[in-house]
Image (cartoon, rainbow, N blue to C red):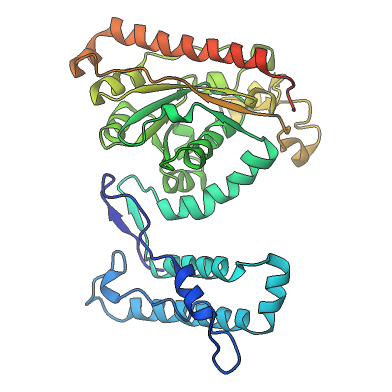
Length: 372
C-alpha cells in the first residue's frame, strides 16, 4: 500500500481527488456491446507523479500496486455492470451507480496511497468518508441531536470550543464533531485535544490521529489555533466524564485555564458549548476503583446495565441530546502577552465555566424528557 503525502496543516482545504460520480454518469448513459461500462472504467488511474509520497523514478512497486488496484476495480465494475446491477438498483435505489463508483474510487486511492494527511496525522478523506459516516446515524437517529447556535462558530479562522464533559464514554466529543461538520455552513472539522490515555490505547491512538485529534497540551492547541482550526477542549477531563450520576450536570473544576492562555496567545474567540443528554447515556452508580488501579484506568464504571448484562450493558441508553453553542467570548481585546497574567486567565476561565453551567440549567428546564 502506498504512503500518504504529509501536507502542512494550514494548506488549502478541500478534497484531493476528483469526484467520480460525474465521470461515471457521463458514461452510464451509453452502451457498449449492450452492457453498461464498468463504473470505474471511466476513472483514470492516478498519474505516477501525482501519487502521494511517491517518486516518479522510484521503481516498479508503485506501478504494481496501481495495477492491482485497477484490476480489482475493473472486476468489481464488470460485476456491477452485469446482472448484479439490476439487483443493486432494486436494493439500493436510484443513484447507486454513483455511490458505488465513489466508494470504489475511495478504495483505489487508499490502496495506491493517493491521499493526504497533515503534520498531525489528520486524514480528511478518511474522516469524512468513514468516521463521520459511521457516527452520523448515531447522532441523527439514536441520540437525535438537536444543534443550536452553530452560527456562533466563525466560518473561518481559529476558534476554541470549550464544552462540558460527561457520560462515562466520550461520546459527547464525537457528537460535537458531527454537529459542527454537518450543521455549520462551512462544514468545519473539530480538532479535539484528547487526554494521554487516548494515545496509549492500542488502535485508539491511530484512529484518533487519523481523525485529527492531538494531545491536550498548550503547545499543540496554540499551533492549531494559529493555523485557523476549530479546536475543542473538555477541561473537566476524567473528573467530568467519570463523575457519579448523582452529580450530573454539575461542572467539575476547569483546571488552571491553560486553554484560555492558548486562546489569548492565538488571539482567537472562545465559544462555550453546553451538552445535555450525555449524562444519562451511562448512569454511573458506582466505580470499581481496585479494578481501575489494576488496569491503569481512571475509573471502571458500574451502571444499571454494566457489567450485569455483559456486552449488552455497554450499549448506551437512547437519550435525547441538545448541543448549544454560545456567543463567542473575544480574546483579541487583550494583547497576546496577557496570557501570562494569572488573574486575567482565571477570570476568563471562570466566565466560560459559568456560561456553560447557566446554559445547562436553562436547557434542563426546557427539556421535556430524558428520552424525548
